[in-house]
Length: 339
Image 1 (cartoon, rainbow, N blue to C red):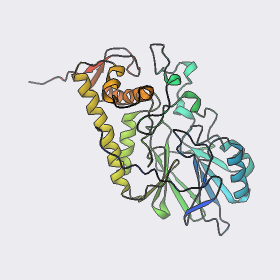
Image 2 (image 1 turned 30 degrees about the vertical axis):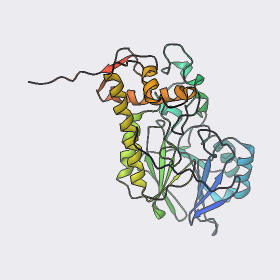
Image 3 (image 1 turned 45 degrees about the horizontal axis):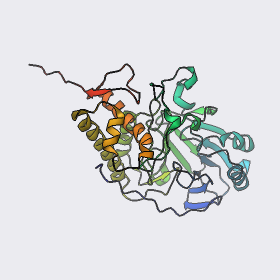
Image 4 (image 1 turned 180 degrees about the vertical axis):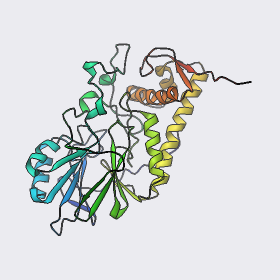
């Protein structure tokens, strides 16, 4: 079995209310619960609200009237200087549009969805190249608490006013946010480190309640593992995911457990290949035999992400032209031995 992750699913919150989490961090939770948003999107407000200083808003959230209206009521235009986005999914960035107009603040993010990838209808790689149901026909929940991404969950309309890169600093009244590029969940994902409190706004990169969904081609497990490794060398001692409760205890140990879990999945895939399995469907039937078959579609996407990394690192070979394909056949790569 994969290495156990100590998930934190107890979450104290109130919808549509301003909640103080620290001297410089407040949260407003949108009423958009689902299998992949947990109880909903947590929009964070960074700055000192008591002295009238300028604040930043991180992940304004979905385009829900109630949520947008609450944020407008809580924050007057003169109070907001920055709108930051961790990534372009519809539960994170669409509310930028009405709030940007209302507050007159600039938006900040890595770039448009896919960081330059084309839309599926314009030639992007299909997840199911055999013409089956593909990602759009799969159940959204997995046994690990995550969900299968669909293309309509991408916010194709968001284009930041200011494009951020790894190491950039965004400053306001009494606060400093360092940008950390963390591709993996999707390619334009950013985390933000609040220097004054050694806190990390981790978006969907690290969450306490669930593993992170990674769906090729824009999701990439190799990138994800490298992005997790990047966090291990940092000094933050609390994480604020966009969904679920803060991670307060041994954040680096928590990150390591996520990495161990992914590595265990790789070991399982290699074991299945060694037993003669060649397709993802065959592997899912073994690796997820104790999971409801209704969730095997979502599990297949997780296995696809794992195999894609194994192919990239030369440990697995795809027999077909497109390794990012649910219906492809795979085999263990034969390593050359020098004499």
